[in-house]
Amino acid sequence: MEPGQRRTRSSLAVEVGDGKYALIDAGHDLKAQLEHHGLTPRPLNAEGFRESRVEAVFLTHGHADHTVGLAEFCTGKSFGIPVYGPPDLLEFLFGPPGRPNYFGALGRLARDYVKPLELEAGVPVDVGGVKFMGFEAPHTQTLEDGSKYPSSTYVYKVSGGGSELVYAPDLGRLDPWFMELIEDVDVLLLDATFWWDDELRRVSNIPVTSKQLGHVPMEEALVALSDSGVGRVVFTHLNHTNPVLDPANPQRKAVEEAGMEIAFDGMRLRL
Ligand SMILES: [Zn+2]
Ligand SMILES: [Zn+2]
Image 1: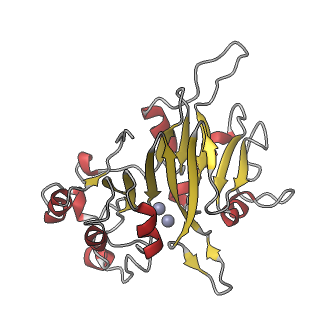
Image 2: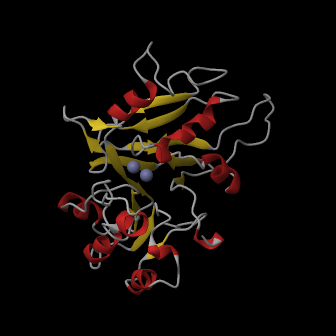
């Protein structure tokens, strides 16, 4: 794959004022992403420690590409950074008090290296004057008992300074409630894992569809969003098989002709 077509795992840092940031998701590439954007802890202060620039982390769901980067916070000074997410996700990652799961007691110097905080759907959390609200969305697997594995999934609406953004990197369907949620938002960052529903069969002969994996195919999303009222549509969470990665492909041209954008590493969005 050409260097310009490569992508690190999708995640978002929202500036919440005064050089502080809230992250949405923390995947495998978090360390490199934080370093690249100068979001690592500040230089040593008078008390002898490095202050974090990350004020909070909001998690969408339990898949590894959205969560394993939390381990970045488990060494060195414990900042007790609030980590918000769907209640079943926090239980999956951290476990109940006294019975830690994988991330529950990972801190080498302090067990409370982060502070997991359950976030109910539709309830806003304010970080530095910016509001973050999670909405339950179709993506993860439903087990026989009706529970979701590894967790339920949120998409996030972020509001501040009169602007709104929706972050939906993993989304199985563009249901009516979602179309209502994104009506008139300034920016929508949307799941673009696959272009075709049968992309994995076409490219790798794997008999599983995009929809079965909980990702709306991009060719359908393009049509559904053509007159949605969204200011900017930016496609993210691209799988390496997605033909839009190659600027020479007709699918890329179709996105550009529709006035929509393909996210790239280091992309900055001003609201
Ligand atoms: Zn996922
Ligand atoms: Zn994902």
